[in-house]
Amino acid sequence: MEIAPGVELITVGESEYMDGFTHTPNVYFVQGSQGVAFVDTAFGKDEEQQAYLELWKSRGSPRVKAIILTHRHGDHIGGAVRLHESTGGPIHAGRVEVEAIDAELKGAGVSVPVGDGATLDLGGATLEFIHTPGHTLGSTCILLREQGVLFTGDMILGSSTTVISPDHGDMADYIESMRKLLPYDARLIAPGHGPMVHNPEAKIKELIDHRLEREEQIVALLRDGNSTIDEMFSAIYPALHAGLHNTAKSQIRAHLNKLEKDGRVERSDGGDYALR
Ligand SMILES: [Zn+2]
Image 1 (tube, rainbow, N blue to C red):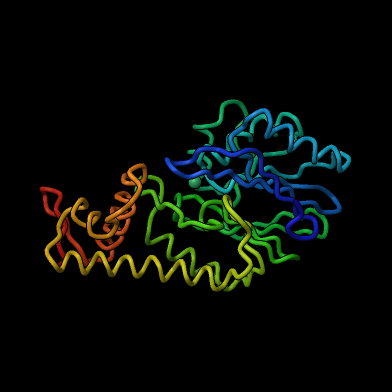
Image 2 (cartoon, rainbow, N blue to C red; image 1 turned 60 degrees about the vertical axis):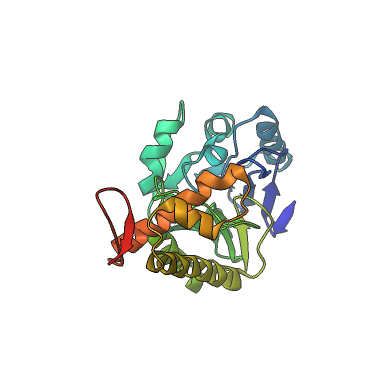
């Protein structure tokens, strides 16, 4: 499906993603006059590979200038090695994420680590890499300048709120990264999962507000004497699907980590939290 001139969205199948949700990864094919790039590679299933290669061959097997991985998670990097082997395209990823991705990929690893602000010219289609830590510490968004299309991986999703893993990511970085994206004036967000976002500025502001509101909610709960993640979880998510409990608790932990870093919260030796 063409989402903008020269940009195709490829989604294959329905995949179980966290209990209760189906969340097929989005893969994008960007075409310029001198070459093409893939953005993300889904899980690496046979039917996915077949779909990518069919599309690529239908365009005359143009030179693949990059297979870009937005971040380290398996539903984005799973097809990278096979796609590299079939097309010869070099695997690109944000510099900070390279080590984690190479540890996951079997066979070829990342051959082009990209820094913040690096660009790749496909011929009338310029991709700019933007270092946007948060969901993971090396998450990268990519702007197709000519069309104003912003590929966000899991930093911004089409219809749900992304997970800030306290182990792979960072809430303070996430909010900073969202602010960093605003001046790029994207016209369309092409997320790693879910539908296209046609009002990027409003969406980004909404995501920042949502996180800051949740942060203040946690501060208020601490003020009322709630001191553990379990207590805060019961107050914030009274009727959440059981399969999402651990994810929700890790979101609270990510917020508490940020508040600790900001100097607003301290953690006792016993693991309880309190306002400073
Ligand atoms: Zn992810």
